[in-house]
Length: 242
Image (tube, rainbow, N blue to C red):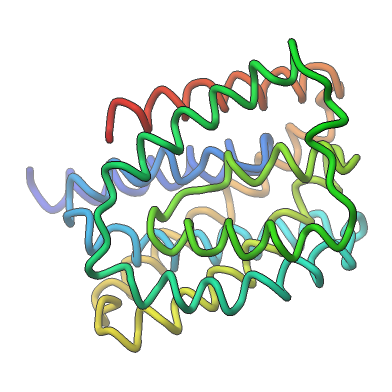
């Protein structure tokens, strides 16, 4: 694969990923990570993805800044920061296959539960986001992509559309910044990785802008349907990739 082909492939994947994430709140990493792994390998792909996702999430925070639920982010960060540090330090030696398959099973189960179970069972109090932040941040440091796990809990808390997208994105920003500190301390994050991540992140800003325009015109019922479809696709993808 030539350098130009790689650049076009990565740029197109970054734009598609950020547009999808701006509409559904997640799924962007599921689009971008396989392409990054193909070009750079898994160990380099996840830190690069983290840099790119940091920029993409910051843009979604900005485009939805008037609808943020800051208390949710605060409690999420309380548990998320220390857990992301621990997970980032373990990343270089972690076996990922089992966790990836488990992630896929969980995603599919979430969608099934929404239709056949009691939705109230999924709800958590505001302070419960500290526990969720710890669990999600630890897994994110190991797997790179856990947005599909996070979104059902933000959705069940009552956040929709711009509030959902912006609040989840800000919580993810806190998580990614902490992960990058840990990756940098273990030399997993290289100068080349930072440059590639920044370049892809700049493309993702435009994708977030396009996605926000789509989101503002999307009916809530269709919005939830899109989330569930993305959960199923991501879950199957994790099972296959694991």
